[in-house]
Length: 223
Picture 1 (spheres, helix red, strand yellow):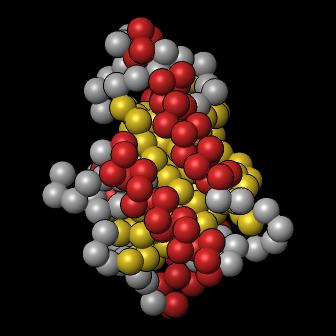
Picture 2: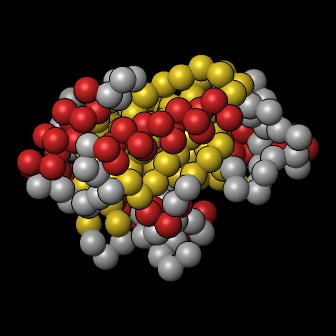
C-alpha cells in the first residue's frame, strides 16, 4: 500500500470563476486571517473554447502524511466556507520528491487509481520578457503537444503576472521516471523556440475532490 510522507501543498478552490475585484479582495482577506494563514491565488487557466478563466484557490504547505494533509485541506475549506465562500474543490499535492511517491512503473502498481502527477513549466524569454510572438508560439506548442500526447497541455499564468506563462501537463498510471519523459520532450521543444524553462514544478496529487473543475483545461472536455 502506498504511503506518501513529506511536504504537501494544499489548495482549496472557491467560486465564482472570473471573480469580480471585491470577491478577490475578500478571498485574500479570508486567507490572510485564517488560523493557519493561506496564500490567496488567482490563476488564469486557458480553457478550450473559453480562453483564460480566473480561478481562486488557496495555498499553504504542511509536513506529515497524506491523512494529515487531507485533514488540513478540510479545515481550510471550513474556514473559507465560514467566510462566505462556496468551496468547489480540495486538492492535496505532494512534492514529487517526497518519500513514497512512485519512482517507476513497478512502484506505481501499488498506487491508488485516482492519484496522478502534475507538472508546471514556467517559461521565459531567452533575452527578456516573453514577446507577443513568443506567446503565439507557446499557444502553438500547447496545441501541438496536446495532439501529440493525446491529453491537454494547456497554458496558464498568475493574474498578478500577466506577462508570465506556464505550460502544464499530467501523467497517470506510471512512476516519476515515466511521467518525466513527456516533460523532457516538451522542454526540448520550448528550448528549440529560443525560450527558457525557468523552472519545472513537479507534483504528485494524492487527493482531488473535484477534478471536473479542470475539464477543458488540464482534463479533456466532457470527462
